[in-house]
Length: 454
Image (cartoon, rainbow, N blue to C red; front, side, top):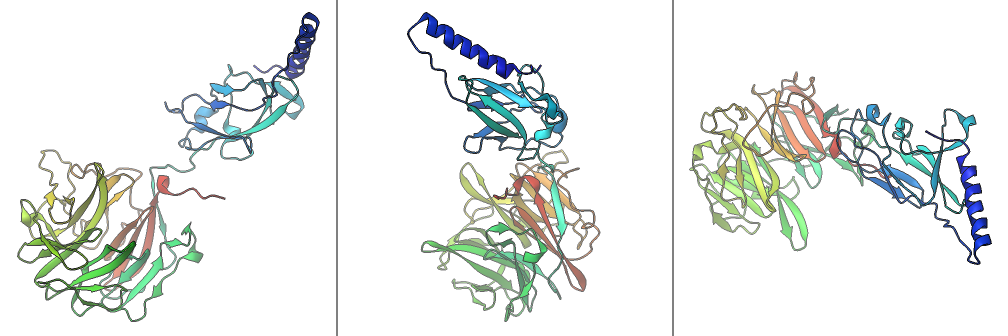
């Protein structure tokens, strides 16, 4: 309930008390001029309390963590259970301006929908105990406009020109797409701001870029390494004769600088300064940027280890950096089996041996990523058709999401080779090559998108 003109009544009451005090005593009673909000909070929304911030300089009250979609049907009748001030609070019903300011009663439910996602918000006047000092605060209730757990896809307005096979890779903070005889690149972010307009997106040819003769395009990897205090990146690729080549600029390639650079089947760049090398006879070892080799192993079931079209991702477990890889294997298996390592040289299978149907099925071209605190494997049940996503919280039990984290329906209709690059908050999918039309799709999880500072 709100009582009209109670502010005036309260002022007279305070004056009366002050006069009475003066008549009964020689001591002067000074009432506080504090007209600030000390704490604010509302009842739970879907069982959760949301913390509110009080900006005393701008006299704004707002929640940093946005309420979920659908919260408007809850806050249209909700209690403000915390509103701590020294004096009293009045508010105005903006829908009925002639009603004037009224005392705000915290025992009543209130409709906060008029404060949703607006800086003007709802207005509250805080009256100090002295009856004279008044400050006005605005309340903004921030509510998600989009489901934070939904994966949103955009088809980009332009795509690289592709002929033959293609492989996309993140190199020096740019998205590169290589073919056997050319390379093109684009920014994934524009300056200090997230790339979100067509004006800041476009593909540029890299003059002089050409891979080594007979290079296996699918083996292309990018290794991060330390050069003093600086972190740099170097590209590696394997040729059909089993030789690894490297490039610091994506244009000029030379044979890699370690002893025994032959008989190589595939490479993995899962850790800074550590390049994993897998040979055709099953040997596995690592080399650093100076070409020093350290022998390793793949545990059991070496035939299950991916030997081509390898994708890797990094994550932390128990404060230790880990890498996970998937790819095509020599053995005909029914699962897409992830392998993990904490050092790049020793690898262990995460094959699901349970009797339950909770594994990722065999994909022709699987791509793994750790994204939004979950593992995802994108893949094709057909050779050249991206048509499935599987998710996991532990890398062992996998399920196909039925809603929210899905491919766009138009993407699943595309029959073409594809490459996938995760550069959080974005996921890039490049379709095309081998005579098919090129197209670029960019996805993002709503909750990972940064909030712009105006």
